[in-house]
Length: 395
Image (cartoon, rainbow, N blue to C red; front, side, top):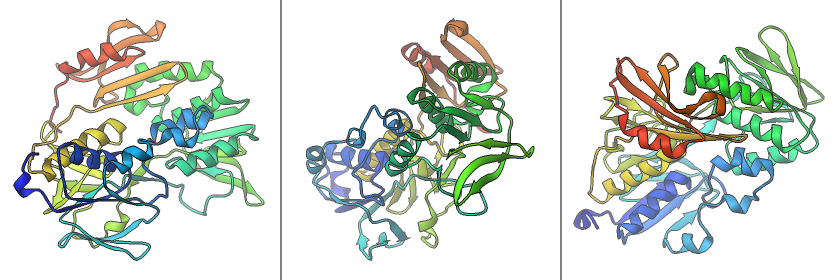
C-alpha cells in the first residue's frame, strides 16, 4: 500500500454513488486496512445511473440489475454502509458530518461524492404527471407512468432528454415530443453536423422535435399536467412530462462547512477541497492542469477515474488528476462515444466511415488543435484516435 505510514485510521465517504463506491473499492484494493464508512441519502445500495434512462426505463432490466455490486461483494469491503440517511452538514475543520437522522460521524478523511440534483422549472410545485429522472425511484415512477400514457413531452434536449425520448419512442405506443432550446438534440455536445444526424435518427423513429423552443411553464387540470407551454404561446399536449433541464451539484448541505462552493466543491489538482477533505464525481470541480482551469464533468467515466485518483491521494500517492474527458450515449441503434471537449463552432472532419451509413469517426478541430473525437457505432476506432487530443487552456 502506498503511503502506509501516513494512511488515515478512518475514511468517511459521503455519497453511496458510483464515485463513492469506486473510492471504497480502490482503497481496499490498495490494501487500506482502516475503518471505512459509506453514507448514502437513498435507501438503495450503490447502483448505476446510465441504465435508468435506457434499460430500466424500457423495462428490459429490473431494479436489482442496476446494482453496481452484489451484496456479497459489498460485504467483502468490510465497510459500514449507512443508507437512507442524507448528510445535512459538514464541519471541514474537524471533518465531522451530521445527518438527517441525527448521526454525528467523524473521520480522519472525508470524501464528498454526493453527485447532482435535477433542476426544476421555476414557479409552482410540479403537478402530477411531471417527472425528473435522477434516482432509481424516479426511473421506476416514470416507467409506471408511461404504461398508460399516450402523449409524452420531454423538456430538455441534452443527453438525458435525448435518451429518454429515444427509449420512450421504442418502448411503447407513445406520441413522443422532444423540446429544447438547441437547433438539434445534443447540439451543445456534438456540434451541428453530428447533431443534425441525431435529429434525423429521432425523426425517423417517430419523435417529434421542437428545436429552438423555450419552455415557460406547464398547463394543468385538477392537479395533473395537461401540457407544456412554450414562449410562443403554443401548448404541447401531454399526459406525462419529463424534466431533463440539467442538474446542479448537490452541495446545499455544505453551507457553512468552510469549503469553497462554486458550481461544485472546488478542489485543487489532487481533488482536495481542504485539509483531509476530498471530492469525486459529478459534485467535484477541480483544477485540471492540462486545461489550466477549474472543470466539473458530469459523466460516469469521470466518476470512476476520479475516485481512483482520490483513493491514491488518501493513501499518500498524490498525483494531479488530469484525464481526457470521455462520455457516451446509446439512442436507438446508435452508440455515440465522445472523447475530448469539442465546441459547437469547431471544424468537423470524418476520419473513418461515413455519416450517411451512420458508422463513422468524426474529428473536431479548433485551428490546428484536435479538441474531440467521436465514434458513431465505431467505439474502438474512436478510442484509437483519442491520443491526438491536446488539452488547451481556457482563453
